[in-house]
Structures are given as C-alpha cells and as structure tokens.
Image (cartoon, rainbow, N blue to C red; front, side, top):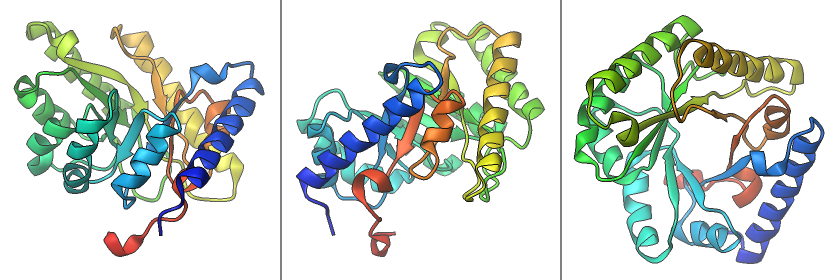
Length: 247
C-alpha cells in the first residue's frame, strides 16, 4: 500500500535530519551527502511524491522495472538522475544504457568492458561506480581491491585510447553493501574497507570525476556517513516496506 504524499515527505525530512546529524558528528556538512531514493517495487506515484519533497536522485535494482516505470516520469518531471544499483547482466546492458544516468554495482571487468564498448550509443554522459565486496551476503562486487584496481586499469586505458572518453563515461567512485547485521563493528569495517579502496584508487590514478562513496542504506546510513559516504541509498525509511508481490 502506497504511503500518502505527506507521510513520504515527512519520512524524507526525517532522513535528511538524520543525515545532517551524522555528518555533523564527524565534522562534515550535510551538503556533502546526497540522498538517493530507492524505488524498487514502489509505484510511479511514490516517485512523484519523493520528487515533490525535493529528491532528485533515484535508484532501481532491475532494468525491466525501470523501463516500465521511469519514461513517463521523466516526461513530466525535470532533472531526475536515475541510478542502476542492482547487478547488471550483460544481456541487459543496451536497455540499461537507454534508461539510466549512472550504473553502480559494476563488479566484474567483463561487465565494465562491455559497458565501455557500447557507450557510444548514448547521447548523455554515463556515470559509473565500481562495487567492492566487503562482507555483504550477496557476494556482489569485485572480490578484493586488486581486482578492483585491475578494473581501474581497464578504464584508464579506455580514457587513453578513446576520443572524448572522459566526457562520455565518468568513473565517479565506489559502492558497497555492508552485511545486514546488528553488529555495528562489522558494518563499520565494511565501510572502512571501501574508503580505504577509494584512497588506493586515488593514489594510483587521477580520474577527473572520481570522488564518490556510495554506501549506506536505511538500516546503516548513519554509520556510512560517519565513515565518509557521499551518497546514501534509502528505500524503506522513505517509502516503507516494499510490496514484494510485485517482485
């Protein structure tokens, strides 16, 4: 059941307040942290409610659901940024390139290479995030930092050998999912691993747009912000529980 526009707006205000407090607790500004509303299994009307409450960045886990939901929304609402945050399958790349502004969750060189090879079909720049597996149950993402750095090598070669590549495909940062647990120390360790990986990438490469840490969800985003997150992906705390009958 869809929460009312008022409830969604109240939830967003409450989340923003928590973001600000978490940022301030470590000497950061709330403006350093962007809010993504994750709309998986939530209807278009929920997206519109979040938009009216000031959200502009949205996340979807599945290409097919995004294709069905977002074209009409984009036709009527300006300045939406849509991120693919689920695992992208190679046979869905062309469809993903047609609907998403950013692809997070890139966890293999195979997928990264395929994306880079097909990005010429896009008119707008594509933003990419590499995913590091840091302990979440799904096992998604690069298994270790060495493999992630190999992917950075692939992107660096793409920049070197492709005309206007830096404007067409921007490697913006890293993402991860912490383990779903009540043990804050395990969650914090997960986020610290990603922050350390980001520093390693920055030490070895000088990618012009590489500055983001996409980490933190409804159950752990305050810890993520304390550990340096610049983008939190919030679903349940905004929209309530998903209607899994549609999944």
